[in-house]
Length: 392
Ligand SMILES: Cc1cc2nc3c(=O)[nH]c(=O)nc-3n(C[C@H](O)[C@H](O)[C@H](O)COP(=O)(O)O)c2cc1C
Image (cartoon, rainbow, N blue to C red; front, side, top):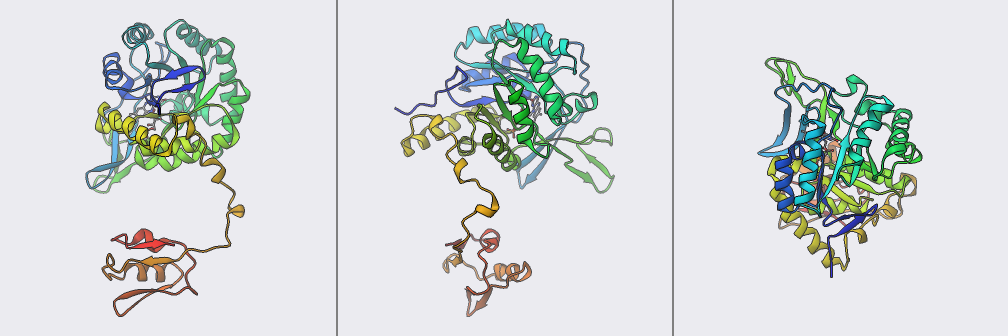
């Protein structure tokens, strides 16, 4: 019997879909609702010492849309506004009501040993199942020397991980930033410092755009903005790359995050090393109810492949990632044009001509491929407005 149940570091997840630390996990009542709707767990909105100031800007979001579809999402939001006591009470309430759901405490503190250790000790005695160290928020916090300012330094990341590991009584995941030159280097450093696993990725530092009438950048906060964090479906390729690079360098569990909008995205993350996945922007855009289709879709897929559980998918694509010099280059593919779908618009001919190869021509209403000139790059198949070109 195929199951969605997954065990990571001894923690039982009834399904591999959990909410990422973000607005959907900022309130106890809403996490309660998400659990009732079927989410396997939640990483709580990042908790900080009560005295860390958290003054938000308005507005705090900007989006990049194609038609009505939100492809990219930018935020300049800070961290949790609940007090530590409110979280402790809420975590207890949620565990009593939903004993099978996993709760992970995301935490962040100034770079002071006692501050990190006090937070960990406080939540050691709560019902949370694990910790996630937020070393990766790219806005607001780095100005204070925390968030991404920690996660972009292997040295500081490693030092804080050691402090945390000295006192943590629950598994510790380190949430890594994609805004580094070499994510594997940071992963290796925190693994060496004792971390039990990774969460990746946090948001990608971004600037959504500029209003050309007023020259005010977005999101517009009374005419000004700051660099924010980019998320949603457009960051999936970055998240997949980061998770794969971490997996190539470590065997520790990975909670995959970044642009996961459906079961297919989640399954792809698993093939490059994720044990389970976290979702944020898709829920902010379409609501908690998306979990139903995610779970059913993944279950159907696992069954169709004869897999017993999500862990059977883990790492399956890793062996197919290689250095460019080792790619099998002895064969070449060529475009095959479906004459029924082709509208003879000539776009592929123009683009091929203007992008180096001049391998396509229109002759008597048909697109002709010159095998001498074609290098098999596949550009024509991507730009065809009718998807009439397949590389074979
Ligand atoms: C509005 C917003 C607030 C967020 N707040 C946090 C946070 O408090 N702590 C954290 O670790 N990540 C935070 N994130 C990052 C998400 O947890 C997640 O890593 C990122 O959005 C990528 O996943 P997605 O593409 O599914 O949104 C936030 C993201 C958004 C969009």
